[in-house]
Length: 165
Image (cartoon, rainbow, N blue to C red; front, side, top):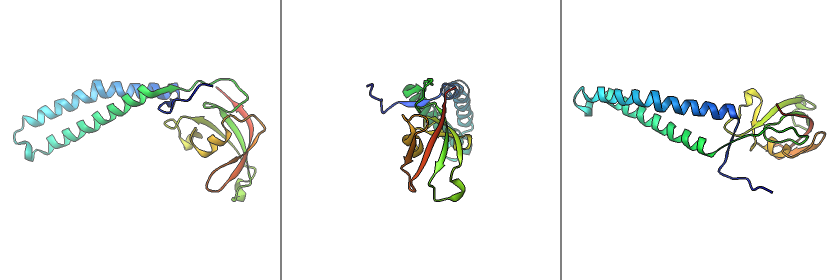
């Protein structure tokens, strides 16, 4: 069995591409612009009372920090390979039925969500992290399986369908 690299950052191909685009923009557009802003501010004289210089230096620090962060993410990125399977995996879109919840309105509620890496997660788009309690409970499980979710208030779900796109 292949050992999972704990340093990997799981991403969809779209998300990896967007990080690469952002990195390219910061390096080729924003970095040169802020360097020019710093030069202009220096030419105005006394740096100890030059607010424009301070703002430009702060912006430069933010840009450099984001560049470093993006380079790290890209270097550790592993693209989620979506494969056809009857087993829930990262990249799967699953339909679930909720059971035994303390909230009656959620009993037998059917939800659909996609399991993605943590940087791709967006609960408003029904995309949950593979590290979330729900994803951990259903990963590796087949259709029609009922599993208990280890959360502050335990509940169960039934896997109704598994899709990969």
